Image (cartoon, rainbow, N blue to C red; front, side, top):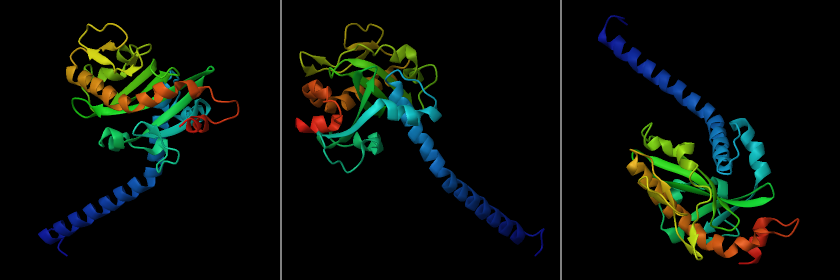
Amino acid sequence: MNVNGNSYTYVFSVVMVVLVAVVLSVAALSLKPAQDANIQKEKKQEILKSLGIEVTRDEAEASFETYITDQLVLKGGKLEANPETPAFDIKMADAVAKPMDEREVPLFIAERDGKVFYIIPVRGKGLWGPIWGYVSILSDGYTIAGATFGHKSETPGLGAEISLPVFTDQFPGKKLAVNGAYQSISVRKGDAAGDHQVDGISGGTITSVGVESMLNDCLQPYMSFLLSRSSVLSAPEGAALSDTLISVL
């Protein structure tokens, strides 16, 4: 073949494209298990972070097993005794796309320093893409213990600050109920006051509104369950919390 001809150039280009595609495919397939494992660890990190527990990715597995005592699934605000999908494997992006009464959502139960906490995942939309997070709630069923948020592509210095302490540190102590009825958290423009409001991010109005909508949409399916059953969190010694909850349904 004439190496200076067009045919050689075309054949060489095709061969190189195919070889590169094969190499990339093999690399992607071989690395996927490690990538999936890291995603699982990072998820556990974020769940623990909502409790104020900061661990490295390598420490996440052991710490998660230490603090998380139960992983439950709710549907339509009720506990599912035999869910098809384990709580940890539920994809919130798929869950929030369904009507509220059809959603299967996870609820994580944690114990720390002799206290019980509920941990609820949340997911919504920011300015440029998805936002998400975890909210931990005290055993009374409505007082926020902590919160952590993440984002895919919010603007650095503006909406991206939802993941920073300047925003998340406002949540501990806020309330999700008034006289036994659910009330979500409002994100205000610098004039937050009382038990149900936090200040939004300056210059990140759309992202702040996204956080408010996300909290209202994702926390609401849990509240009737949490408020009506918070008293059963003191499970008998030696009994699994999920067994105690099921026994009162």
